[in-house]
Length: 343
Image 1 (cartoon, one colour):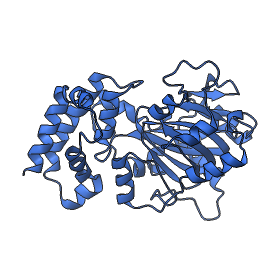
Image 2 (cartoon, helix red, strand yellow):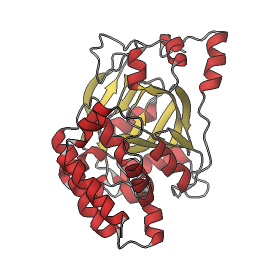
Image 3 (cartoon, helix red, strand yellow):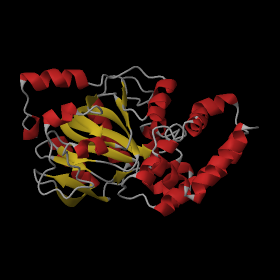
């Protein structure tokens, strides 16, 4: 592997990798929501996103044209470039030119496009229709960070974690992902750039990775769509130059998984005030849930919130339960859910 010398393989590791491969699946809403509820990564081959490429048109040229037409070209954004991952500021126009030329390694980190004309053109609502964050107040909605993902071939993202559960849809290109539970990996000596004092590159061993029960790897390529919980650290290599988009989400199926993680473990951006605001926003939203039709509840995955409430303390120690329930807004949220369940 030319981009990351920690991934040099032997026959033994090749066998182990075969066992850890996460195969993509055909999409159903139940599969998506169940994976969110269980805290599992899932990759779909046919997630329903509608990008209407004109018949006979080259897809890459068509995508480039959309980005040029519907994203302000003079906007200044940050990109990571070179083997040192140096962050520089460039215009959108220069970013697209770099990507088209394909002669430098770089990755876009902050090209947000909610509120632009591009949002509808690429059907971005398809992977955010269940996301509660955009429907909540500004104190919490910022976490969504709906952004374009534009990467040159060979760009390497060192081991890191994100606060939110994340989605990523690929229009063109190919990325190789290695993922594992951050807490399990830490016990085995795998570093995470988000939380550990990393010198040059996070400590990673393919053998240690393969020893983890949570370890899995997969490919996100053209028309594949990834959904991955935020407890998974990940290491990503762009194998073919890539355009896609993604965001962080909080939904009914993953709500308690996320709030418990943020409460009981480390977080890079989520604060107690964020959690309180999030819970208060959901309590307000629940007032309208009781009025939803059965079809609406199924569309949003509401029943998974009630299932999670029933299993709230499963696999939690008494100390963790006490820590989680000492938050007044958590207790108020549980009471609100219980009232609806009794109706």
